[in-house]
Structure formats: C-alpha cells, structure tokens
Image (cartoon, rainbow over all chains, first blue to last red):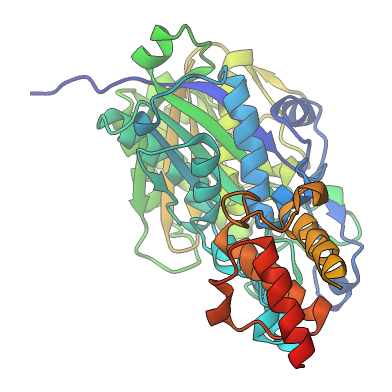
Length: 408
Length: 81
C-alpha cells in the first residue's frame, strides 16, 4: 500500500551572493548575465597560482557586536535566513514544529585560520572562546536555529559541494515524516582564503584564467579549465502544504522530491559513467512521482571542470534518455562561481524562480559547446519555458550525488 | 582608581558584548543584568587582564558575579602585583 506523501511547498527565499545582497538582486544578475568573478586584490593572493574568486557583492549587513561571535559563513546564513523568513511572511510557528537544516561544505575555516594565527602569535590565552562554535560545521545551522527558535531539530548534513542540496533533501524528509511543519533549509560557505584556494588549486580543480576573471567559469565550454571559488548563502523556507495553506501563505513553488546516491568510485573524481548521478536523478523523479518527460528545465551542477561537466552530461542522458533534448539546461555557476556548500541552495532558488517566471537565465561564457556534451544549454539569450518540472543537481567531493525536483 | 577600573570595564563590555557604558554600574551582574554570556565573559576577563596588567585565574572568574566584584578583584590584584 502506498500513501501520497505530504506535499512540501517553498514559501520563503533568501540569498546573499557574489551577484547581490538579496534574492531580487541576485536573480536580476542571473537574468542579465552578470559575472560575480573578480581578481582578488589582497596581498595573500600573490603567492597562489589562482588570483580570482567570486566574493560577496556586498558585505553581510550585521551589527559589529552581532557579527563578532559569528564566522563569516554564519553571518551569511543569518542574513539569508532573515530575508527568507521575512519573505515567508514572518509566520507565527509552533517552535516545536520548526526545524533548521543549514549546511556548509567546510565550516568556519576563516575563523580556524585566523585563530590559528592568534595562537601562534599571542598564545592560548588570547584564543577566542567563540572559536569552537564559530568553526564547527553545524555552526550555521545553530545560528539560524537560535535566531528563529527552531526546536524540532537543527541539522547540518556535510557532503562538500552537495551539502546545500542535501540539507534541502533532509528538510523534505523531515516534513514528509511529520517531524516538523516548517524547515528553514539551505547552505552557506565562506572559504575565500589562501589555504582553501591553495588546496583546491593543488587538486587542479580551479580555473587559472587570472587575466580574464569574468570568462573563467565556463561550464560545458570546450575551453573550460576548472571552477572559480565563490562564497555566499541561500536559504529556503519549506513548509507542509497544509500548514502554508492554513495561514494563507504565498507559495513560490513545490519541492516535489529529492534523490540522493553515492558514487563509491573516487574521493574527488566523478565517475565518468555518471552512474551515481543518474541514480540520484532517477531517485528524485520517483520521490516526486514524476516521469522523465515532465522535466522542462535542469539547473546543472556544471562547475566548469573538464571531468565533472562531461560526467554530468552522460548521467543526464542516462537518466532522461531522448527527452533530454527537450530540456533547457543552465549553469548558475557560470555567473556566481562555485559556492560549494551553498551552491545547491542557491541553485534551488534559481530553479524555483525559473519555473515561476518561466525563464531560464542563459549560461555565461559558453562560446563553443564541448563536442562530447549533448545538452540544450541556454546561451546568449535567456530562454522562455512553459510549465512543468525542474531538476537541480549537486555533486560533491566524497562521491555525493543529490538531485532536487521542483514543480510550480 | 576604582572609577578608572569601572570605566575601563565599561569600555571592554561595550567592545565585547555591545553593553551601553551607562548601564555598567557596580551592582549589576554580568550574566543576568548585562546579558554577557559565559563565552563573552571569558573575553571580558582576558581583555581586563591585558588592560589592567593583572592575572585573573579561570577558577576565580566564577566568583566575579557583579561589576563591583570585578572592580574590587582587579584593584586587589593590581596592588598585589
């Protein structure tokens, strides 16, 4: 016997990104094809082989005292969560039915690095008593949970660049299982610092187009040479449909399903067969009770790495077959860079707004599609779409594959 | 002397926890009246050690309930040093 799962709707959106300090500015940036990638001018960048990144367009608007006990990733999560909560109408919610799922891929690495300097230069007595809450990877979830009084659970699934999507998938499970009625869910990442950039560069994962930053993130392009590290946060307010209806909430879209799988292939390299990713896509369709033919848009993971983009294209063909030719694909990262643990959450926001506005932002910098990639990617002009379902993929180091399914 | 210490503590509390210096008077408790949590209290203590050139061992911190307790402690520790 099967029962229809509780429907989960999206009632609030928030973001702080390389394109803007809120959802409206970020979406306008995506629709106008702006790049958030810049040359980093701080002294520490000089020693590195990579001189570009996608920092926030505006600093988190928090007071000095509020900001000083929060890691940058926590500050960004709080700003995005406040926007999302206000966008949802600042609902009166039973706190014991409110949860938070806010992920970060790396955690408070900037705090860790700064405080390590304090330890070496000034000794242990000067290390901040806020160090541990600021660096722990569940810190942003805790920050958001405390801010809104979430008492049904505070969670931080950590799966590298799939973390933000996995947080949203977990929120779906929590609401479907009846453990909460409202979940504040998303991801955040603040890792633009010398050590993380050096580490990603040593993995040969980053673009080295230092002289032309705005062209560096070029998913699916023949000449792509790696991703661009970005920072930011995106948060969704997810709500049981009956709960949203009872309070007359405005609904942005429906989180129809989610699929999670793992490659068990390599810690960093994607499985070139795309098998794991394809299983995540199929699982998302099943979870959403959708057929492949219902899909009209895919917000691809598409980070601009040579191996990753190709494996994703193979996976999508495997999962959707010939119908893939009817699907409009885009890469948000061509404009925002790669927000790691926040990427899936930001791309969930973009997917929902695309369905809602019936428009898919064009992918930047796709001058010549890779011959081995058979996808209909929106380029140059934004693409009008009809009504239907959208998928958003996220994959992470560790072999994590997550696919979210949305309907309007 | 104790007025200087009080003013110095008020400046630290403003920096660390955003406490209005006008609220910092001898009878106020750090935690209940001034809303300084246990983590920020550690910062206050470390900053006070530096500002007044005294040592405030961790074991002594829990006896410092009010601003007045801290002023007296720092005054005594300063004389002892």
